Length: 201
Image 1 (cartoon, rainbow, N blue to C red):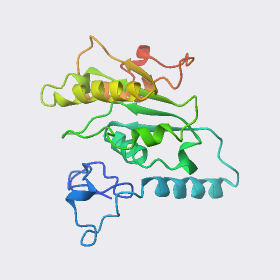
Image 2 (tube, rainbow, N blue to C red; image 1 turned 30 degrees about the vertical axis):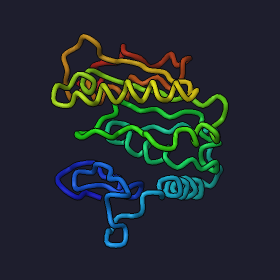
Image 3 (cartoon, rainbow, N blue to C red; image 1 turned 90 degrees about the vertical axis):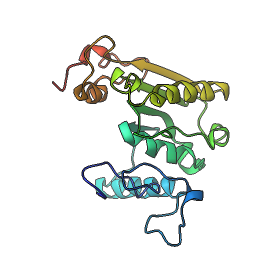
Image 4 (cartoon, rainbow, N blue to C red; image 1 turned 180 degrees about the horizontal axis):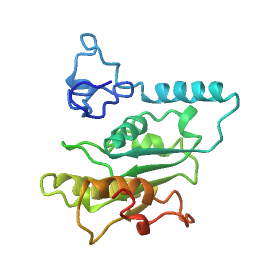
């Protein structure tokens, strides 16, 4: 749903402000709000997956990979706060692709310990970054949040991989979208990587 201009809005997964940034449940009056309650992200995704399976006429493959690009990382955040085994037991990895918001708070800080208990043993967290996000002088908190999230996940025993694409190249909006072409889906992915920087120019 578009709430103002052309900002990405993920209101079906979480409560958001007028710019699409996530709001904490405690800061809102859910009875007075048209937005859904915050703990609906996993249920909504599972309904979408079931609908897709029905449309295709076949079961979806398992395991699942979950991807969140740019502000879409906030959706991964919402999903990771809900440690429901019905979804997370099927997820092999989550990929945060050049994630960042205009305000702090894109990464999950609650529920990680609970999540660790329901994901498969081979579960991985990937952080795919570009200088477009990490070196933005107007948002120094983005790089700090990446570092803190990585350390928090590692301290809980998660396997975390981090990749940087476009290092040394001129920072641009196109670089941000290049991350979609560059991001590696696994350590054995030979078709991706920084050689694809400039794909969207």
